[in-house]
Each structure stands twice: as C-alpha cells, then as structure tokens.
Length: 125
Image 1 (cartoon, rainbow, N blue to C red):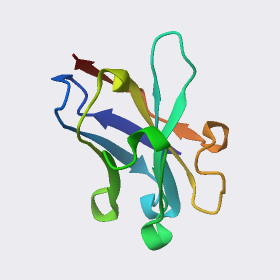
Image 2: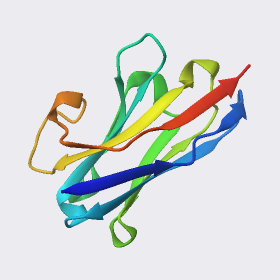
Image 3: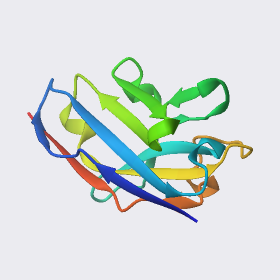
C-alpha cells in the first residue's frame, strides 16, 4: 500500500504561482511513478504531469508545458508540481497518483493504483 497526501492548493490570482506537494507513505517511493491529474466541476479527470523515477522522465499535457514543472525528492518521499503563470482554466481539484515504475502509459489515469484525496486550486481572473 502507498498512501498519498496532497497539499499546497489555495486561491491565487491569475499569473501567480503555486507549488503542490504529494507526500507518500508506505512502500519504497522510488519504485513508483507519480502523476498529477486534475478535475474541474462537470468535467472528466485529466492528466497534467507525470514523473518516473528511473532517469526522472517527465511528461506533461500540452496546456501546461512551459508553465508547470514536476519533480521528485525520493529522500523525502515527495513529488512536487510547480505551477507558474496560472490561468483561470487551471482551476480544479488536483490529485496525485502512483503506480509501479514498470507500468507504461503515464498519461492514463486508469493505470494508476494509488490516489490521494485531492487539493483545491482556484485561480481568479
């Protein structure tokens, strides 16, 4: 089992920045790939970013490339999502999720096994 807890979400003005954290407890964190997903009211959960442990490969959805950066600190069992130049359309509940690093399809939410409870990000215009 891996327990995930997100934090860092809050209300921010457009153009501002936030850093979300995903803290993990349980099994060896470095053996897991971690993804960030988000869900706005009335929409489906969508992929935002993912990071694998080996070679720290990263993946981003097109709408956040150049604005968001995913990183991880395995010593702290934590993955971060640095979000810059935030836009109102970034408003959503952000979830982190984890799966074994041997699993492919980093953008597919259905391949992730463990999920956090989510943290609300609200970007005002």
